[in-house]
Image 1 (tube, rainbow, N blue to C red):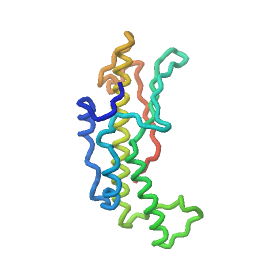
Image 2 (cartoon, rainbow, N blue to C red):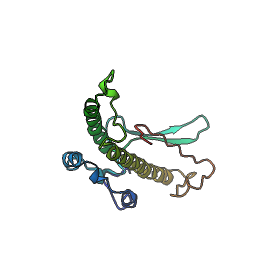
Image 3 (cartoon, one colour):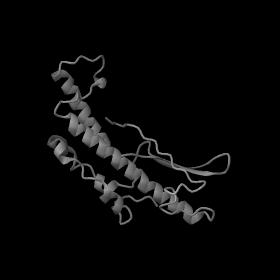
Image 4 (cartoon, helix red, strand yellow):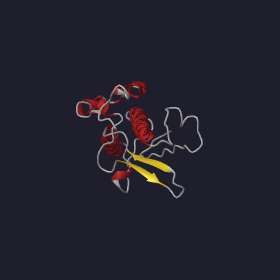
Length: 173
């Protein structure tokens, strides 16, 4: 039941995301936006190491583990700004022991666009996981008599229901 495109069910979550900060850097967007289908991928799992797993613990409690993220747009943003940060290190004459330690110094022209773009990708990844988790929990609820999922059940922190959200590739000020 995991959708492979934005559907009527995922449209409200997609609509709640702010627009990708296009003004951030026109060179990035002219290269990537035509290639990436992030608009159609919200609520979809992806490839590689992404997975959904249903687990049973020692108390016979059911857990759903979901690993997915920003479906390529986050990687594209990261790749673009890593290359630019390496260029900035040269421009600022900062000598690093390894080029992969490059960063964008606060005050350089790409710093604010980078922070905005990564923040958007983090919001997109969180929305992506939320849409998929809701789909999985609805499917489980349809099959298990003892469990009935409602969208607000996790928000109400009902007994026996717990959500743990852990992310990586995180940037914050």
